[in-house]
Image (cartoon, rainbow, N blue to C red; front, top):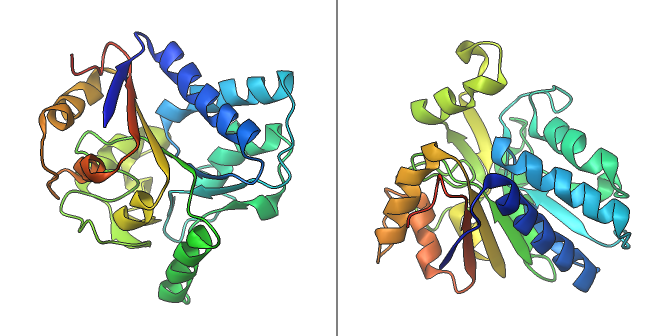
Length: 241
């Protein structure tokens, strides 16, 4: 696990966008694992700029999002599908059949979750997985205490996560309390992982991660210590050193 401090949040986002662009350019069949949230918005803005100024064939790539709120209408402006279309998909040459999200409907949920993992692993797992991190160390919506063996499933969101996500809703009461998320085991199958953390609020958890020598399920992101190819990109505010 390698930590890189890029100084400011803009440069950190540019670095991650360039890594995504290089992956797409070098591997036309790439499978990308994508994340949402405020931290990722400048990443996708820069990736759109790169793809517009340096056109590459996107017709064979596939993307897989980490999570989606449970039973929230996917056409809702608060959904992660809407987020991805607004920030990325509607601005690049990619078709709806190329991007995938966990199924967030109650009907056949267990079967759909299994199918999502199977689709991710079909032919080849995710080549490059993008992650953010919660202040409690969650990755995706895998909250503290999640078994490292977990796969895609429905989860209850912690109070801390609900409070953190309330800024995207009119009131905290509107924040969904459940979601469907890729599991930790699913994430760990990826060839390469880049975790981006910016801002003072992320400094404490990044410092904890930096100091750890053994994974602990109390901090889900610590599982990345067991992955052979992880970059953790920060700005000065989130840097552990």
